[in-house]
Length: 102
Image (tube, rainbow, N blue to C red; front, side, top):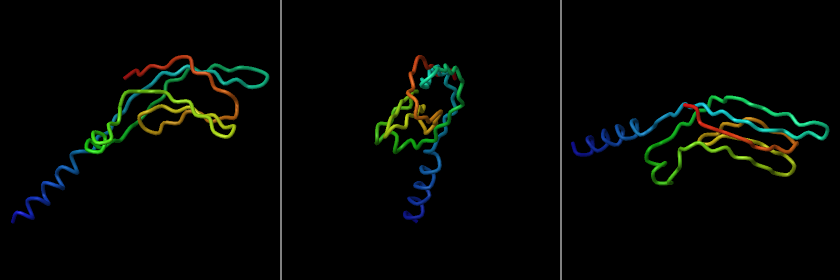
Protein backbone atom coordinates (compact mmCIF):
# COMPACT_ATOMS: atom_id res chain seq x y z
CA UNK A 1 0.00 0.00 0.00
CA UNK A 2 2.84 2.37 0.82
CA UNK A 3 4.46 1.72 -2.55
CA UNK A 4 1.26 2.59 -4.39
CA UNK A 5 0.91 5.86 -2.47
CA UNK A 6 4.55 6.76 -3.17
CA UNK A 7 4.11 6.01 -6.88
CA UNK A 8 0.91 8.10 -7.03
CA UNK A 9 2.64 11.02 -5.27
CA UNK A 10 5.58 10.80 -7.66
CA UNK A 11 3.23 10.87 -10.68
CA UNK A 12 1.32 13.82 -9.21
CA UNK A 13 4.50 15.82 -8.60
CA UNK A 14 5.79 15.02 -12.09
CA UNK A 15 2.57 16.14 -13.77
CA UNK A 16 2.25 19.37 -11.81
CA UNK A 17 5.88 20.44 -12.03
CA UNK A 18 5.84 21.46 -15.74
CA UNK A 19 4.93 24.96 -16.79
CA UNK A 20 4.82 27.04 -19.97
CA UNK A 21 5.59 30.74 -20.37
CA UNK A 22 4.23 32.64 -23.38
CA UNK A 23 5.68 36.11 -23.77
CA UNK A 24 6.40 38.78 -26.36
CA UNK A 25 9.63 40.69 -26.82
CA UNK A 26 10.20 43.82 -28.88
CA UNK A 27 13.64 43.85 -30.43
CA UNK A 28 15.47 46.44 -32.54
CA UNK A 29 18.64 45.35 -34.33
CA UNK A 30 20.73 46.13 -37.41
CA UNK A 31 22.11 43.70 -39.96
CA UNK A 32 25.21 45.20 -41.59
CA UNK A 33 25.54 43.98 -45.16
CA UNK A 34 28.60 45.06 -47.21
CA UNK A 35 26.69 47.72 -49.16
CA UNK A 36 23.89 48.69 -46.76
CA UNK A 37 22.60 48.38 -43.21
CA UNK A 38 19.01 47.31 -42.54
CA UNK A 39 17.30 48.04 -39.23
CA UNK A 40 14.67 45.57 -38.01
CA UNK A 41 12.06 46.52 -35.41
CA UNK A 42 9.99 43.43 -34.63
CA UNK A 43 7.78 41.93 -31.97
CA UNK A 44 8.51 38.24 -31.43
CA UNK A 45 6.11 35.74 -29.86
CA UNK A 46 8.24 33.54 -27.62
CA UNK A 47 7.58 30.37 -25.66
CA UNK A 48 9.43 28.59 -22.88
CA UNK A 49 8.46 25.20 -21.46
CA UNK A 50 10.16 24.48 -18.18
CA UNK A 51 10.22 22.08 -15.31
CA UNK A 52 9.96 23.50 -11.79
CA UNK A 53 12.25 20.90 -10.24
CA UNK A 54 15.09 21.03 -12.80
CA UNK A 55 14.85 24.84 -13.17
CA UNK A 56 15.32 25.23 -9.42
CA UNK A 57 18.11 22.66 -9.23
CA UNK A 58 19.99 24.14 -12.20
CA UNK A 59 19.19 27.71 -11.08
CA UNK A 60 17.76 28.66 -14.50
CA UNK A 61 16.85 32.33 -14.87
CA UNK A 62 13.51 32.94 -16.63
CA UNK A 63 13.97 36.66 -17.23
CA UNK A 64 14.25 37.75 -20.85
CA UNK A 65 17.62 38.18 -22.48
CA UNK A 66 18.67 38.59 -26.09
CA UNK A 67 21.81 36.70 -27.07
CA UNK A 68 24.05 37.26 -30.06
CA UNK A 69 26.09 34.29 -31.24
CA UNK A 70 28.92 34.04 -33.72
CA UNK A 71 30.48 30.79 -34.87
CA UNK A 72 32.70 30.24 -37.92
CA UNK A 73 31.34 33.24 -39.83
CA UNK A 74 27.70 32.60 -38.99
CA UNK A 75 25.93 35.15 -36.78
CA UNK A 76 22.60 34.57 -35.09
CA UNK A 77 20.30 36.26 -32.63
CA UNK A 78 17.97 34.53 -30.17
CA UNK A 79 15.79 35.31 -27.18
CA UNK A 80 16.08 33.43 -23.90
CA UNK A 81 14.49 31.68 -22.02
CA UNK A 82 13.64 29.05 -24.57
CA UNK A 83 15.13 28.52 -28.01
CA UNK A 84 13.52 31.41 -29.87
CA UNK A 85 15.83 32.04 -32.82
CA UNK A 86 15.12 35.19 -34.79
CA UNK A 87 17.73 35.39 -37.51
CA UNK A 88 20.86 33.69 -38.77
CA UNK A 89 23.14 35.37 -41.29
CA UNK A 90 26.77 35.78 -42.27
CA UNK A 91 26.52 39.57 -41.94
CA UNK A 92 27.33 41.25 -38.59
CA UNK A 93 24.41 41.97 -36.27
CA UNK A 94 24.16 45.00 -33.96
CA UNK A 95 21.64 44.93 -31.13
CA UNK A 96 20.12 48.29 -30.15
CA UNK A 97 17.15 47.61 -27.91
CA UNK A 98 15.01 44.85 -26.48
CA UNK A 99 12.17 44.77 -23.97
CA UNK A 100 9.80 42.09 -22.77
CA UNK A 101 6.27 43.30 -23.50
CA UNK A 102 4.08 40.74 -21.76
